[in-house]
Image (cartoon, one colour):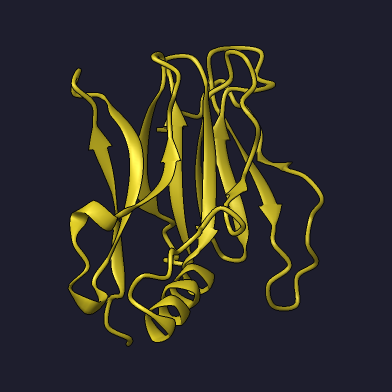
Length: 166
């Protein structure tokens, strides 16, 4: 396993709301002042969070309010390569993750979902399309291995009145 090349972290504003995702490079004694802004919430109603997918393949930026959310992601492998290339080139080379950042699903009014990646697919737990106040699970295969890729999400586990997803 390769040694870490940096860390993603969230920064709180003066109201203690996490509103920025930053990246700190470990190479060449980089100072915090040179940390890279990865994502910022400019909307007072939204906060951000950072984490990784269950399979460890993706860094996930969660952008959410009380009624809706969006998940952005970037490949750990690709982002690490960008940092390694910058470290090899020069200590002052600016790392730019924006070309690698993808949006899993655009924000839709009053639609919340939780997302994860594993077993060659993206998974969403959502109330979207449910007739009652229950959840359903959607899947979008990413085309890894021998499985074909899906163009969009499909119902994997439908809403069920007697089933409680948490």
